Image (cartoon, rainbow, N blue to C red; front, side, top):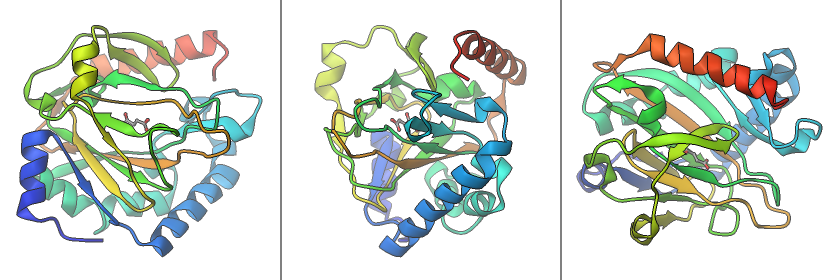
Length: 252
Ligand SMILES: O=C(O)CCC(=O)C(=O)O
C-alpha cells in the first residue's frame, strides 16, 4: 500500500483515472484471492441469484460477477471500511465518502465477454455525479484477457447517451461509441496488486477474454461522495426491471 502523491491526485482530477502500481503486496493479493474463494464456496450458496452472475449458469467455473460482497461478509466489509481504500477515496474525491459496493469481476477464459463502453455514473444516478470506482487487479491483465480502457479527460465532458447493451452485468452502454472514441482510449495493463481508479463520469470499457486458459480476476470498490444525492426511486425501478429481465431470460 502506498500514499498518493500530489501528481497522482492531479492525474485523477485532470484525466479522470489514476494507476497505483503494486498497491497491494503479493501476500495481500493472495489473501484476497483466498477470501474470494471462501466467499464463492461458503457465502454464494446462501445468496439470492442476482448477487452472482455466470456466463453460463450451468457451469460454476464461468462465474463472472459477485455483487455487494461487503453487505454479505465481514472480511469484505472491513476492506471497504478499513485503512486500505477508504482514506484513499476521501483523498481522491477531496470530500467525505460513503461506502457503496464491493464486487468481484472475472472474465473466464474464452467465454468472458467484453465490457461495453459506459460511465458508471449512468448506473449510479447521483446528483452531483461524484463517485469513484477502484479496480484491483488480482492477476496479470492485458489486451488478450480484457484490460480496462479509459478515455482520458472524458469525466469532464458530461454524460453520453446510454442504452441497452445486451451484456450481462453491464446492461447499459454508450450507444454512439465511435472510431474517434477508440482512437483516444488508453489501455491499462496491470499486474497483481495494481490498483486503477476512475471517476464515475470517466468513459471506459474492456475487451473480452480471448486467451485460452487465463482468467481475468479483479475486485471493484465503489465509494460515493457524501454530498451526492441518490435518485433512489429511479435506482430501485432500474434494479427491479433488471432482475425481471434477467429472470425472464433464464440468466439468474
Ligand atoms: O472489469 C471490467 O471489465 C470493467 C469494470 C468496470 O467497468 C467498472 O468497474 O466500472
